[in-house]
Image (cartoon, rainbow, N blue to C red; front, side, top):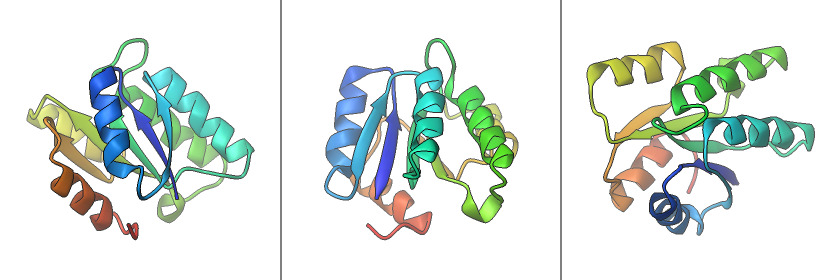
Length: 132
């Protein structure tokens, strides 16, 4: 399996990597722009990501916009909803607008509020259908 961790905070990025590394190869990005480029490159190399763990609040391009761009790129490749990458949005903001934007506008698979609990993160990943 192949995961992309998108998080601008070094400590959070390292913690997420330590949690999921036993289950998947992990690539890292520090903002939404890097995430989109990594996502496109993975498809070009015929090694798409199975899961993206993406922070919402990041510089340059936030997670909400990156998710919209990723979904647009998937449509340009002719991928339907069942073939989309699973995306778990991560944020310190638990307000309803972020939930609506992540789920209904961006098509996120799930949403977690920080601080991230290891057991809950692994459960949410399993709930997306991935066998970890």
